[in-house]
Image 1 (cartoon, helix red, strand yellow):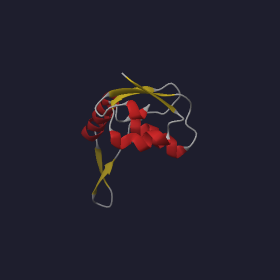
Image 2 (image 1 turned 45 degrees about the vertical axis):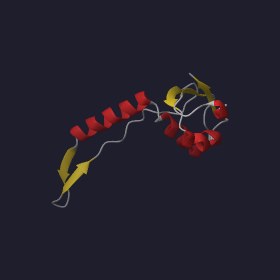
Image 3 (image 1 turned 90 degrees about the vertical axis):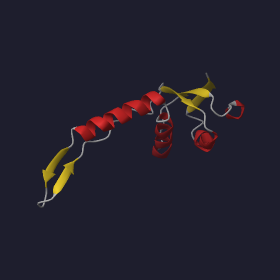
Length: 105
């Protein structure tokens, strides 16, 4: 399927089953972050965290108390996203192909 997709074409990816290995789960989440909506949510959450950053004193030096990052992309069964196909990501898609269904939109 990946050979028939042209660069710049929009594709829809769906997680078919729960990802067991941590490395594969990280790869799927990294691919999910290519979705413009997920990317927008992550950027908006990052701006919110930086706007509300608390600076405390620690050893008479300013110390930023940072919040945890947002989990906008979660590799659970049934999760789907759309993204633009980039040929450089082909190896990552092949590595997790048993978990994903890829179709052109």
